[in-house]
Length: 162
Ligand code: HEC
Image: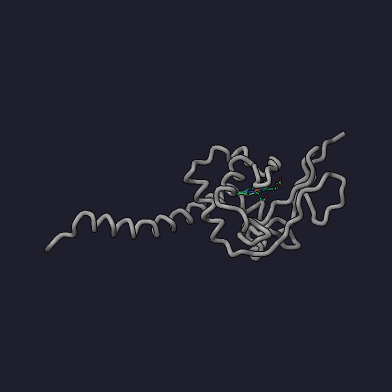
């Protein structure tokens, strides 16, 4: 049997490999999003407080008050315009690892970007690739507010005993 020439084999394998690699990347991103609890914070909840599959990573319905910083609701991570739709992949990766949003604001540390700072390039790429597979879902989560301002959604408060 005549064997394929080496350049042809290379051309065929470079055609076949990226599709497999993309699947692997997305699967790894899904795994990381689960164990790094992106899902726990950025998923909406039903009235009885359970994570709602219909609001999977579309932004939280419960926020966090950080003393001295304000109240923060985990935003929509889908690629709708109310989520990360207008962000480049590099901007999403930068926010995850450095806390810096495209507008220059540094995310509150309740978003654990300080812990995520040491993510490898491959792992942050996997997370972004996975987020891009989520169905774009409109959900305009309220931006941060100063403590004491009227909140439109519930939030966890940090109480210091007297
Ligand atoms: C403990 C809760 C928590 C966890 C866990 C968490 N986040 Fe967040 N995240 C937040 C909060 C709260 C904000 C908003 C902070 C702010 O506005 O300053 C945020 C903001 C973001 C932003 C910026 C979005 C925007 O519109 O400004 C991105 C991107 C993001 N998170 C991705 C992730 C990913 C990916 C993971 C998992 C690897 C993750 N987050 C895990 C709470 C969390």
